[in-house]
Amino acid sequence: MIPDSVQKALNDQINNELYSAYMYLSIAIYFDVYALTGFSKWMQQQAQEELLHARRLLEFMADQDASIELREIKAPQASFNSAIEALEVALQAEQDNTEQINDLYELAVKHQDHATEVMMQWFIQEQVEEERSARTVLDRAKLAGDDKAALLVLDGEMAKRDQVA
Ligand code: FEO
Image (cartoon, rainbow, N blue to C red; front, top):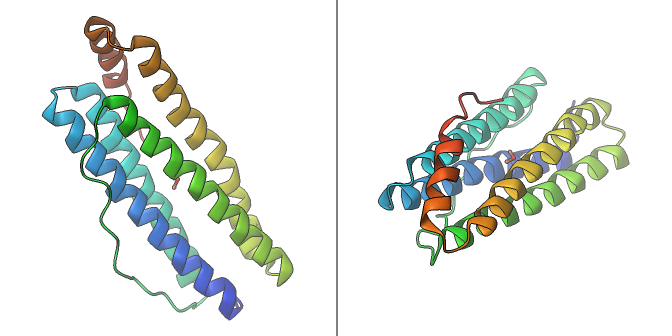
């Protein structure tokens, strides 16, 4: 049985993951408008990954007969001044998500909810990768700077991503 406060935090985290999917879709649309299809594809795959994260939590709760609440998802930022800004928004969202996951882990430890502790350890590891990949894309876009040819080369690299981990 998951303690009530941990159930609430897990429901919050499901909402966070669904919001992240929304946010990545919003950024994908931004890149589509500028014909940066590689960036857009990368963002769409990130959105898919966030849905998988939400599903993992849903199944974890369902397996323990926990009370699942699907709540309203807030609208993500819809306009960006530049590719760099859009990528900064993505990285910041991942960093915020890491904090929320760390808080959830601490709550599970406090309540000696070992199953949630173990589940959150997976998410903590996953966030290392999520932050790294978002930071790498941002750093490489910064290297391209105002050089449109370099940005197109990077866009081609982004298009090669072919799986959702
Ligand atoms: Fe579900 Fe991007 O972390």
